[in-house]
Image (cartoon, rainbow, N blue to C red):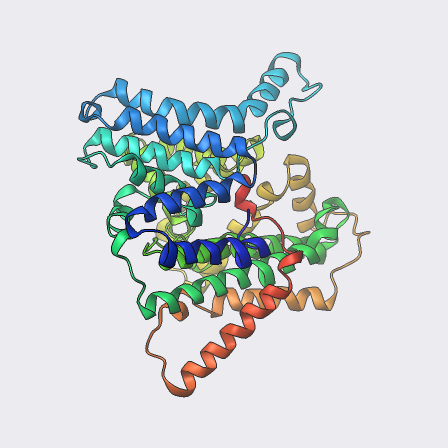
Length: 457
């Protein structure tokens, strides 16, 4: 089930809210949300919900004893289950194809990840949450193991289950404990409506509108002229941002309805001053996860170049089972390490120039996200004016859409608008009316919406 579906917006969510606030006993709210989350996730297949449930039980049983604290053997046992499931469902095909290529020089009849093994949506996200919990128990950061129902809700809570943010248990433990007594304040409801409306509009009217216009150009990167190639590059850069950012806004808003305050996952990343700053703003919870559970344990800055290469290569592999994703990760490792080397020259540049250079470098890197190596090379050639130029150029309407999306990206602060609670009189009426129109427009085009890009991770 997707946030951008009528059955979620008009059936699932209203029903869960009705049961949560009016029908279910307050002491059973946790169980209700767990059941609702499994139903939400199980729409993709009962087997997927079983994988999620087994992972939750596995990690709970392995970490409920205080003997896990300081015991590497118990930690390895705790994370072995979810990591084995992640490898089987996401990386088995990639590993088999890579092995065949290394031994035979050709892949031959490929092992199809999506044909032979159906990937559970968002498995990378909830696996990282379970691994983080196990490590925190090992380190003693979580002194007392929570009951199974609290841990199950932490992992499976439907607003953040499939595409984050990647949460630490201590970020939601208080909300889970207070669930029975939660009554939403007016500002919670207003903020939730704002976040969900802005997120749905960002996805449907921003990301999906761009995706539909871009489709014919994306399909033939080698035939693009200079204008078509740059339209694809910039279009995909804004598309993936509004797609993932839109999901995160919806998740934050849905969490507020049930008393959860999720951390921001985006901090205006395309206004970053340098590549390192970009990773402090883009997919923030993943960046913090990588820092705390990979980079620092590897030694941090003591082996800077090596550790940066390792963690970014793994970051790329986390995003997708393909060498193009590993290359994307290493590309960003090079950007971050390169920035460190040229920092004395970079930092004195005007802030606007720093932002433009960073945005351009990030945009070029998305080619490895959009295409395999052959497609990315074709797009880069076309960006340099070396494509054959036989594809039709983007229309003025396409450029106008891109300009409008860019203006919203750099000019509108959705979180600030959603959280502002000092509107009165005419200003409140105008905001409410504008929000209603935006939500209505998104609703109209929901049936043409596409799956969130990050659902496949």
